[in-house]
Image 1 (cartoon, rainbow, N blue to C red):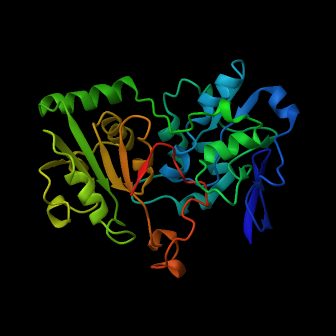
Image 2: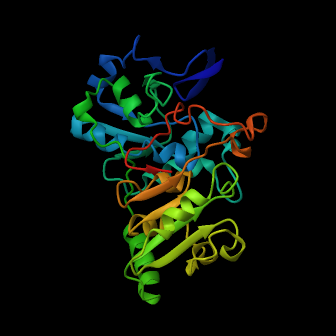
Length: 309
């Protein structure tokens, strides 16, 4: 059994159900009255970078279908009010999970306001229509299908990112100072080498035979990894924030990495090669660690345009 959440008048209510969402064989849809009202809240009930970035196309899709609508995103106060200590499940190091909506949607031209609260129903990621026979359907598309969108109204659900002027200038200065015009970006997390065969990614990187500068972000120093054949600038040491890192990534010639939110956020902007989790790791829960993942996209984390390895 899984917990299906309802968010109503800034309160969170849970009920145990067999599945999250509605099967395509027996679908339910968003009420017509909500659509007619034209005030929409974009919300997730999980709060990692990947959780939110994979629905970042939704404001754009809503504005295209309903040009006069208002699109709202919860601010930090609203997330704290609704989810409270649950947010600690996604916080790590100095990262405050209550800031995730701002990290992902800052400077998004399709977002009208970051709000403190919302009176009424919030139709979030648990309100989606899934196809149990096809898990390669993005969560954004599953959610928008619940919102009564037709296929031709959601052709591009790949994640969006809109750097600010300051983010662009900061990263441009870094590239200029290092005399970098063309580069590729490699980003790996602590699970690299533990949940999939790392050689799949290494071999793909080695296929790049053109003159290329390299940027590397990893939890471990480059020299201590199997990627130590790269002559790369190590980004972690430079203290760029998440959005500055992402600004560098969307302007890279190629992006390489294992399956993390940051690496799923680039498919619209450059060829992005992502090493899938083939086995469960510590991040998936201790009881499953080491077991094969039989349906890796069943949670809706498939992203259009990613070249999965």
